[in-house]
Image (tube, rainbow, N blue to C red; front, side):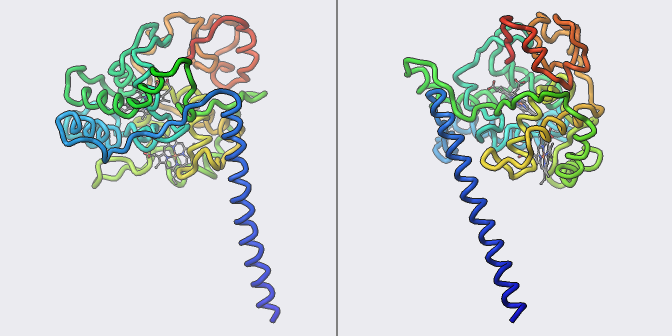
Length: 338
Ligand code: HEC
Ligand code: HEC
């Protein structure tokens, strides 16, 4: 009798909690949506379906480009069948679901915004230049020849995935924002990000997949990582976007632990910033051409961790924050971040 009652209470408790959580999630979701819709006329992007790709030479090239993004290591990794020019990671490790998910570094805007001026190299970058930038930095590798079939395939996929959106944006009379593009910029912390607290976040939420030394889990039989590395020899290098803690925290907040999405993030902003600080305080490969980045030093993002700087804040603060005072000190100086 007592047992039955106990069981009943337990069931009611868990079912109730479950329903409550669900209602709560939907509520947050609605709030997020209405917030976005109120503040700007947002375009909601739905990526085209790969099954609509024709069986033509062009269709094949786009399909190949998608494969290169999903399984980069099998083609271009240390044991790749085309070339050995990258560290074993896949583009998809950071551009989730072949670059199609909201707030997960998606490729929605590539077709409509490139060629594009970027201050990091103080030049107008083509899509091919941008792909090579991620190859050399995020995949700590070598650039592809722009005339290679592989580069043509990357560019074909990226132009196709954002092609319809590009047409929609060019047809509109005003520039609209695309909901979910890139990552969700997090608010700065009032304090410096804390590597010690970040280590605890890492041990609790990340190390079971990414490994106690952030080394990831390589699977020989598939020729790629099941869990990609977060630091060490095979991870992104110091020239990568992820090496800035704002970029790392923004990606992780809405996407990690794996399976999480922006609909129900599991980390608080504080935890995301702290784990970003911890991971980026660990050793990794140096980017060979770092000295050519940000030729105009006043354009360096507040969290760019390498001097010299146009302001008087220390390198330590540029790496871990607090960033707000750095940003304020710049006043009206435009920050061409991207
Ligand atoms: C370690 C994570 C990581 C990996 C792996 C990675 N990227 Fe990226 N990529 C980023 C981040 C972060 C950004 C955006 C931030 C920035 O501008 O630096 C980005 C930006 C891009 C952009 C520009 C997007 C835009 O809207 O401007 C393209 C194109 C791109 N990556 C292609 C690739 C390709 C192709 C690969 C594989 C060869 C790849 N990336 C691998 C992290 C990664
Ligand atoms: C359940 C396993 C799992 C957990 C737990 C997990 N990750 Fe991941 N993580 C992945 C997988 C799988 C990918 C690659 C996704 C893909 O290729 O689709 C990934 C990719 C990443 C990437 C981009 C690629 C790279 O290696 O740089 C970062 C950064 C990252 N995770 C950070 C974290 C952090 C920080 C935590 C803890 C808060 C965490 N992850 C927890 C499985 C996990």
